[in-house]
Amino acid sequence: MTNEKSEAGWNLDNSYAQLPKIFFTSHNPTPVESPKLIILNEPLAASLGLNAQALQYEDGVAVFAGNKIPEGASPLAQAYAGHQFGHFNMLGDGRALLLGEQITPEGERVDIQLKGSGRTPYSRGGDGRAALGPMLREYIISEAMHALGIPTTRSLAVVTTGEPIYRETELPGAILTRVAASHLRVGTFQFAAQWGTVEHLRDLADYTLQRHYQDVPADENRYLRLLQEVIKRQAALITKWQLVGFIHGVMNTDNMTISGETIDYGPCAFMDTYDPATVFSSIDRQGRYAYGNQPYICRWNLARFAETLLPLLHDDEEKALELAQNEISHFSKLYQANWLEGMRAKLGIFNEEKEDEALIEDLLKLMEKHRADFTNTFRALTIEQHEGSDLFGTEEFTQWHERWQVRLGKQQESKESSLELMRNSNPAVIPRNHRVEEALDAAVHQGDYSVMERLLNVLSKPYDHSPEQIEYCTLPAPSSRPYRTFCGT
Image 1 (spheres, one colour):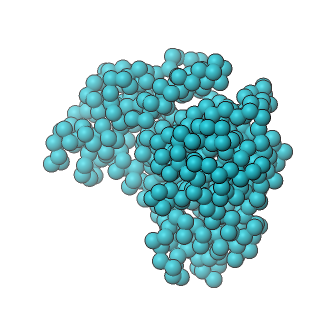
Image 2: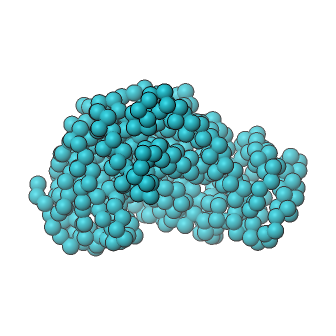
Image 3: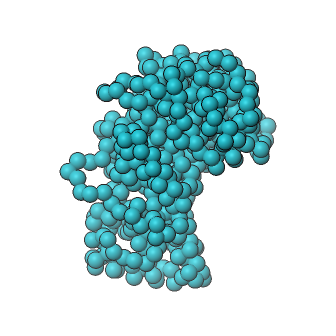
């Protein structure tokens, strides 16, 4: 394996590799037989300062496959731990490698990671590989999340490896190139707290502050400020999930980033029928990570993060615990304020009134009672076409609608301003589960990527409310079996 210098535009640095060795293991990808580029995110490549045309040639594809190392890269697997469904485990990058950090033309620093690039010292018996379907799924959902305005890791490319992998059946192997603000996780801090020293923990916290929170002053309160800022970002992120009906599916602490980005799109899906108890993941049999539980799980995960920081918050253990508990106690109020603001926007409401929460909750109760589609209900309100749902024909909805109109009359903004706010707050399209499966089936089993390309094009403009999107608003055919997702990524 050789370092490959090309015209691709790689401008890599390796600041994470300057941390103590406990946090990573240097490791090269395992070369694959015959890589083939399946999809390249050209707009993302351009924003990173990369030459999309050069990336499509043999040398560029070889980098995405792990067959060549770009100049400046120093591949490594990161160590971390995590609470998985409430149980604490030692983890780490079992099938992913951080190539390095691309410095963009704007001076931003982003991780470039290969996912599915072979075994690492943290593979725990796994083969370190990934299947084509789950890698394409992450590409679709992460790019849809970006278009929705939700902080997320992104997908730069997917290549097939020319080699099969074996799960329940034989599947085509693939590698995803993921771009992230960083791969620092709550689990990274848990690893430091469990297996490192206080100085290791301090090094990690200082690195995190420099990487993501440079505005925090370098004083004695900087670690408390770190906790505060992470809480704020996560409260904002989970709010955005809830407002579009996104269900992550596996909110383990190793899947919560310190940067506030959504990461790991394994068993995730978007809710159709509104129901707070909605679960898609086949392994979440108790509903721990159900849609309605996501804010509570986020708070629980943040409490685990706060625990790791205790030695840095104060020399007195009781005082440190008091400081941490005080900050965690602010999460629910912060989330609720964000959620109310977001729901007001979905209903075209600019100002605040005491009645707003009841108005919002009453609509959601009606949606749950009449099994209304979450996205299409708000879309119908936005375009003022009340059809396609049993909800709209009920007397209860008529009464609610009258209350809503009275509420809108209590603000100075015009009706058109309210509708514009709603258009910008209510997506017309989301990655409907049946549409995602349709695209994946065509790609994986038929070698037809046109279905996925059309879907990606529609999802790239979710707030357009254009005629071209209408067919992607339709619901799946009725089924006696609930939709299920699996941890394939």
